[in-house]
Image (tube, rainbow, N blue to C red; front, side, top):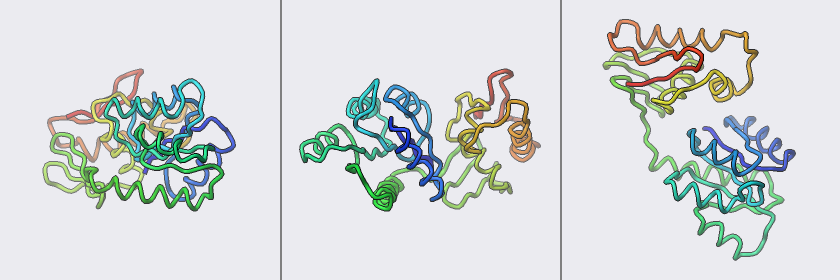
Length: 222
């Protein structure tokens, strides 16, 4: 599960990110509304944790903008405001839940679990590109009906490519979202795993799904 944390207080953002990683989530942070909007509008997340008071575009404005553009990712809004009317305003803006600062991390996790369970009821459980199918529940991958055996890292890379089907995915995006860290620019581990996937996904098929865009990155398209 990938969670976008939009929070301008560095200590709080770091605390949340570390805690989420310890619980097995992949967390990406943004320090202001404009950066948060750019990430939320161009990438796929299972949940957004959004602070109300952030610079460049406040949380309410960002929430309204995302909903106006039909981005339905669940939003958990964080705020230091206690008034009921402030909570109502946040929910009316499109937030799914509201948590007041300071909060116990256990409560944050509980609210995240509830929102993700609700999301699962209407989120598709399979990804498809041509005759390639990926089951998000069983992690079973097939092409033309034939099951493909992938390692956990190969699966994570393929899932990320399929969730962003048709979009150019850079090495930096892969390192941050699949490995959740920055690689030295000289390392070839991403190319190695792309080749692993090609050998398993495209070998023996006339139509190739994984493409390299020299100097830009990779794209998976059907």
